[in-house]
Every structure is written in structure tokens, then in C-alpha cells.
Image (cartoon, rainbow, N blue to C red; front, top):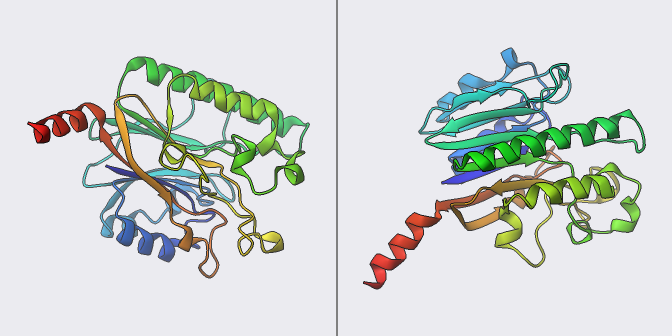
Length: 268
């Protein structure tokens, strides 16, 4: 299966670009972030005509996440991250797609640091760690993907010293992401590109796209039992007119046990 994530930065504004990309890439499951539209205004019918069923948790002006599925109808599991009933920000949706649990994630940015927004980011990250641990322990094939708003290491940003005060690089956020990975999750993009892992985000300011002054903050994490066949970033989307400041990230996955059996059969 091919899974993908894209922070579209306003789904209505970039619907044509999204539909064009879906037709070319044809991912099986897609996580979208920063819809910037309430659920009732989400272009569900246009996406259905393109072959995708949707589960949407929208929000006016900011935030909003969605899961799109081709062929198999997504079955909703959660429409909010557990752990804080008072949290009204639309940042998480989880569904089952053909036996695989998939979660679309839009982790808080957290700026400025220090402050209540950064405190919220860390609290949200801890709730995410707990949910990820529960999913890992359950043993179901699972994919966690989205805009995590964390640069895991200095190798994942063009010039880390110019961003040291930013919430995306704070040690607490990096430690939270590392703690989640230690549960056993595989970073698909890093696995496919262990050296020179592609960036996924380029700020609109100071011609950062033109200079490839980017960051890697969009991540696809997969549970045990999956093999990452390939992964990449569709950079051309960032270079188009009026683009999102993120590019789509995708990964091709197969069940590892099936892959091993297939290789054994070929050898025989």
C-alpha cells in the first residue's frame, strides 16, 4: 500500500492541486493537515469523484485534519486524541482501512518559546506518546503520519543555528519524538533515505524554497510487521504557483512476513 501525508495549508484554496496530485501519485491512504475549513465545507464530493472516501475533523480558520482512502472505505476509530476532554483543537483523526489502523496527526507548533503554546505542544506530545504506545502494544498494523512540527535532528534542517529558539528544535520536543520512536516505530522517510533525508517544509519567506533552505517536520511512522519498500517527497508540488509551504510525503509499505514469504518462494 502507498500511504501519504500532506499539510495542504487550506484545502479549498489548493483543491485543484490536491486532485491533480492524487491522480498522479494514486496513494491508497492520505492524511491531510491544516484544512482551515469547517467539516461541513470540506470538499468531500469532489474527492469522492476522484475515487477517495473521507473522514474529516475540520475547524474554521486553523487546524483541521482528514483521512482519505482509495478502494477501501475508512472506518472511524477516533476523532480526537485521548487524554484531554477540554482540548477543542482539531488535530487528530484515526481510522481502520482494510485492516490497518491509520492516524492523521497535526501536532501543535508551540511557538513562541517559552509560553503556554509550547506547554500545550509538550502536553499534546505526551498524549500522543501514550496513544502510540497503546497502539503498538495492541499489535495491529498501524501507520502514524502527518505534520509533527518537530525537526528530529540537526541533519533535518538546512541551518539549525538560525532556528535554535524555535519550538520545532527545542530539546524537549526532540526528546518527546525520540521517546515515541523508541517504542519501536520505523521512520519511513529516514529508513528509505538514511543519508541526505529530504526536507518536507520550506518557509515562504526569504526565498527558502529557491535556496532549498528546508526542514523535515512531516513524518510517516510505521509499526512492526511492515517493510518500507520506498519513500519520498514530491518536491514538485512545492515549486508550483501558490503552493502549500509543505510538500507531500509518501511511503510504499508491504507486510514484512508476506514479503519474506514471497522472496522464499522465488528462491525455491
